[in-house]
Amino acid sequence: MGAACIGILVAASPLSLASTIDRAHFKVDGVAIVWAADSTGTTPIVSDFVVGTGSGSTDLIGTDVHTVVTGSLDALDESFADGTGATLRIQNSPGSGNQTTRQGDRFTSSADVLNPFQIGNNTDVRTIRSDILSSFYVASNAAFNIDVVSSAIGDPADLNLIRLRMRMTQSGNDDGLAFGSAAQIPHSGNTNRSGVQWGGYRRLSTMTGGRDIFRGNRRTAASAGTIADQSVRFDLDYRWSTGNIDLSAGTFDVEAEVIYTVYIP
Image (tube, rainbow, N blue to C red; front, side, top):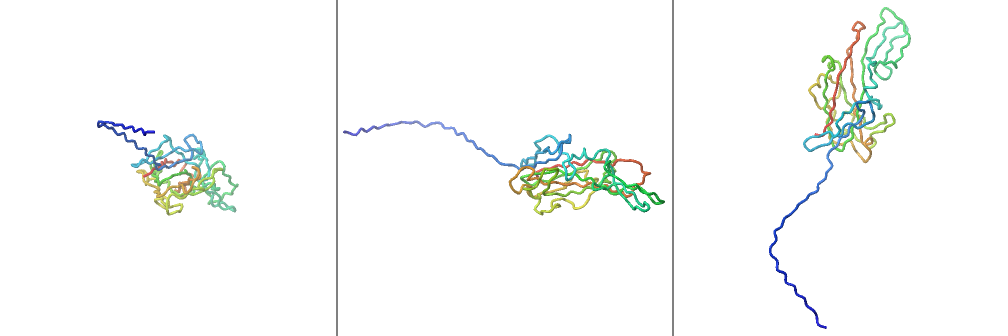
């Protein structure tokens, strides 16, 4: 059998070529998730979802977080109603000493109870130091800062009468919702004051122009977990202490608004 040989000759002319280039690129940006209450008192709810953009950060949720009473998920506006007031002390009562309305919560409300007391020449009612403790929660995959700015509601002089201190709680259980089991303090100093820009109490009047109250250098998420697992709690202590206010001072309000902005630098 003879072999069959097939030869093919192809003549080609040069072709015009066009290139299409496609590049798929995905990355996980910095994220800080802030949660507590919303403006209606609903808790727990995420109302801030901050994403780093490389040149700053933006919030993907167009509402604001409202704080809760520290150690609970009670919205602050609901728990501290108009009936809440400064702590009162009955002093120099014959045979019974002093008693106060500070019964664990450091403010006066309809839940407080006083015992009957005798009156002598020096028996008096005074106000004493009062504190309001509030909190919000943050979970993040990146370092973040917190800016604070205060403004008066009414008399600007009120800002000199209220002082603020910030601390952090790494883990806990508030009203049955556990947080922080997979979290770390978002600063390598690893204490409840690390990254906080001042240690003690500062007057709100020093914060009207805005300033960082916290500067972090690492994420809150230390291991795999849920948003709550990877959250830490920021605790705010507002202290009102003007000395002994006599009954002749009448009634008055001392009030301010304080806004915290969580951002990824």
